[in-house]
Structures are given as structure tokens and as C-alpha cells.
Length: 169
Image (cartoon, rainbow, N blue to C red; front, side):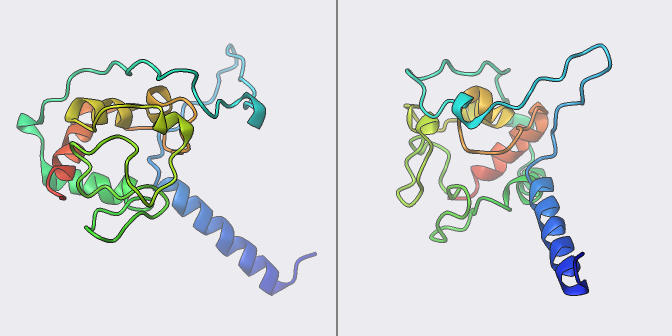
């Protein structure tokens, strides 16, 4: 049986874990219905650590920034990204690489961040469309990425976020 101090510590740890995970988007897939079979979680050995070749780009509708709202994008950043990524120039990486200057930066190129082999396999730069494809579904864009974020399926929300990221240089 746990004493009062141990219970308090356990509850605090669970609360912090829940808060950290809630900042990662909360776009979980719905639970399997009674007619669907739930798929078992892959084992560590089943998760790819390095793709044999660079995966094909994830196809998402082109993002139009003409009507995007950078202020709304800042709110998206604060709600879904800030727990893991900084946008403050010179602050460096946190859990994930810093995002200041991300637009037009080479993919997987922040010097103080250890990228997964899945991300390192991607060539090119983070242009608006590539970033949109990644933000829509990180695991589809780079299977095996360590980014534990389900993605932002809403196109307008992604456009707003990208418009905000264009302002942080």
C-alpha cells in the first residue's frame, strides 16, 4: 500500500504525463467498434528504424496561405507544438528541433538535434507543401519518425500554423 507522499507523487506524475500528451494534438484514432478487430500494438522490433529508401511524399491537398491567419496559427502552435518545440531564435531544441527559421530550412538539419533515421532519409527543404504533408500525418510522411504526434488533419489549421511559422525567423 502506498503512503500519502507516494500517492501524491504518483498522481502528480500521471497528471504531468496526461498534460504532456494532451499538448501533442489529441488526434487519436477512434476505438475499434464491435465489428472491427483492434490491431495489436507493434513490438519494438516491428517498428522500422530506418527506411530502405526515402518514402514517397504524403499526398495532401495543396495548402493555400492566402487566407491563412498567422495569429490563429500562433494559437495552434501554443496548443499543439510548444510543449516540444521552441520558436525563439537562439533558444535551441527542446524535445523536438526548434522551429524558428523552419520554412525553407533543409529537412533534418538542425545541428543540435539527433533526428531519427526516418527523418534523416528525407532530402529537400521544408517548403509550405512539404511541411503541410508532414504536419497532416508525421508517421505517414516519415514512417518510423520519433515524433509522437498524430498530426493536424484540418487543412485550415495547418495553413494557419504554417503562416505563423513563416513569421518566426
